[in-house]
Each structure stands twice: as C-alpha cells, then as structure tokens.
Length: 410
Image 1: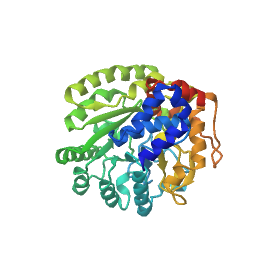
Image 2 (image 1 turned 60 degrees about the vertical axis):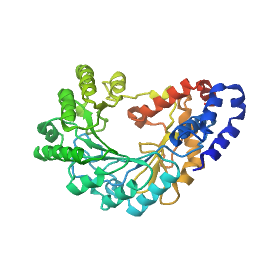
Image 3 (image 1 turned 90 degrees about the horizontal axis):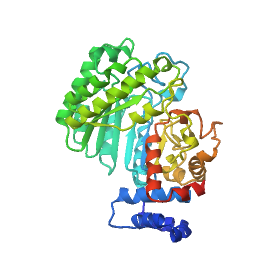
C-alpha cells in the first residue's frame, strides 16, 4: 500500500480541519514524512482516518482463526468445555491452507503489522500448520501463535526457533500440575510437566526474533497461584506473562470471582510485578483495568464501556474465521466472506465503512444491524478485550489535541 497516496487522501479529506487545528497538521506531517518508519506513518494515518470517518490504510492486525478442533477440554472454554453442548458446525472446521496462504499475502499487501493465529482450536492441529508457519516466516510481518503446548515436538520447536519476528504464547492458567488437570477433566497432570519441558527447550533453542509468553486466565479455582505463576515464568525463562480474568459463558460462570478474591489478586499482582521487574519478565498492563472495572455480580469487566468510549476496531483490525467469515472485531460480528472477496475489498467496502463509523459513534447510541440479525454494539462488548487498544487510541487522540474533532464527527 502506497503511504504517500494514503497521506494525500487524508489531507484532501481533512483540508478544513488542517487549516484550524495544529494537531491535525502534526499528524499529517508524520503521515507524509518519507523518513519515518512505516508503522509510525500508518499509526498517524489511522488516527487521521478516525477523524475523517474512513480508512486511509489497512488494519494493523489481521486475526487468522485457522482451526476449530482442540486436544484439550478446558472447563471455562466457550468452545471446548465439556459443559457446553450443541455447538455450531463451523466451530470444528479448519481453514483450507490455500485460503490461509492467500489471506497472509493479502494482509501483508494491506500493510498489516501483526498476524495472530488465535481462535477456537489448537493451532498446531491444523493439517498444514508447518507449511503455514513457514510461509508466514518468509513475510515481512510479525506473527503470534497461541497454543496449549501439548504438541510441541522437536520439529515444531525448530520451526519456531529461527523465526525473525514472532511470539509463541502458551495458555496454562496454572502453576502446578494439579491445578492444570483440575481445569481439564480426565487429562493427566503429567501433561503439564511435558508442556513445561517443551517450553524450556523452546527457550533454550530460540533465536533473537522469538518471544515466548504465558497467558493465565484467572478465576476462583486458581486465584491462589498468582505468585507461583510468575515464579514459574521466571524459572522457565519466558519473556512475558499475561494475567486476564475468565471470560464469562455458561461453563465459566461457576468460576466467577468474588470481591475478596479480586482483592487477593490485586495484592498479589503488585508483588508479581516487583518479582517480574527484577527478573526482566514483562507483565501485560491489562489486569489492573479488568480488576478495577469488574462487576462481581456478572463477572464482566467492560460493562457499558462503549457508552462513553469510541470503538476504533474498524481502523485497527479484522478477524477471519476458519470458514472464511470476516468479523469486525474479535467477537462474533460477521459480514463479508473471504471466500467471496479480498481483504482489500472488504476493508475499503461500504459495509465496513458504515460499521467503523457506527463504532466510533457508539457513545452517542449509534449501532448497526448485521446480516445475521445481530447488532454491532451488543452484549459481547461487555467483555471486550479490545479495550486495550481502544483506550490507547483514545489517549493518542487526546494527546494529539484532536479529541474534540472526533467528538464532533460522532
């Protein structure tokens, strides 16, 4: 994607605003600066796009949800918990390799900076997983793979070890074999030790381009392991840890945290951050927000958030499900299909334009009906993890001195 052409379109769309607002002029200067790196210019163009209500560049993130089957049965998982039944057929599908390969190429052409392989299933179970990773490694883009860690053979470790721009994130939610097995009925605690061994071997053999992380979903059953989790991470030699609260669904609701448990996590996270800093391990900065905004009655951590915060997802990301359906965000908000159109045609199409404008205006009550009868702003927004980048966008708009222009557009 030609950034000079994108910057010209931005200037043409915001001519009046540029005459009266120094923040707009500064953003345009960054967008037009040939000496600036591509991510910096694209970030400025996405902010300018929000002010104009249209996209001047492609998404920063393209989520590829490539496989639906899983070899674990985590009880809190909305897709594979043994306590959830009557799943839709698409939940166990696999994205054809040919489609995935095309989407990787189209995402890179659009200027995507990150390709997370994350979704309902275990990514390593895709029948052509090795081919897909080899393809992505050859592209000028960062990628991230989420995994339960059960299938990390020496061949998989070698596949990742020399990745130039990648992250492997292991979903554990436990610091001990007993807790790990308690979340996974009829699975042996010894498997947890095998996962840890795989992580040690990956850390030992990786090159400078690979980061290794752990994600821990916190709930009533593992609330006492916050500190053991960070000690585990330090011992394994990983780069980062992400603590997050369990996403509520019918299976997870019995694991909902109470007020005393929330306070316990809050106190232990402080100590975990101290230990992590001493060891050079990063802890994502999301958990405090979730704790501060958690409704302990419902277990939701972003209830009503988008009644006062614009949603910038339409400038930041899209997600492609394994059957080709394209979602506006991480949620089940589908319109358009990668089987019928290119990512470029979808991203710059009229339906996406309407959706991104409705999302920006959510604080005013704006909404949009989707083809399946659902709404863009719906109950999924009450447990939305995209608050991380939405808050970052809102802060960037404020710092640029253009927040009032965004409010006027709504």
